Image (tube, rainbow, N blue to C red):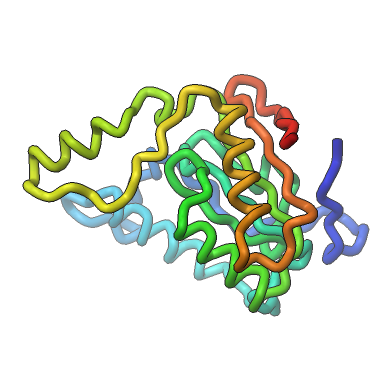
Length: 202
């Protein structure tokens, strides 16, 4: 099933990307690249940005996503959303958090996305093997014991990923601040195969 149609690229020869691949094991810059003695991961990322910026050209876009879609997904490092969905820079808004659940802050971002930046569709993506399936609200109690203060936020843990997708869809569809709730769809991304499986929101 295809639900994204790139509309800002003319059919032409492939264009080399200026975007540098990044992983959790960013390569260590050599002395000629400005390596820092005892460099941290952040130092490596900053060095990588320097190389990226050296070849960067302004794409001439504004903040409005070309495809007028917002994608809400888990922050899991295994999800390369642009690659998995065939998206390019400027196509979408991407909102990520632990579990990809629809929290108050996600609603805040979606409201701004729709009302001020023109998005119309919402795609929700959970995934297999999510870390939130192994947590419970006891995590908040553990934090309270450790630091002497109970977090104001909920863990939003779950056991049934499909049901949690449905819950997130319902939170979007029934929120009074969102203007566009007719095109809200939810999926589970399989981290072993790379495939999306749509969840029936009924």
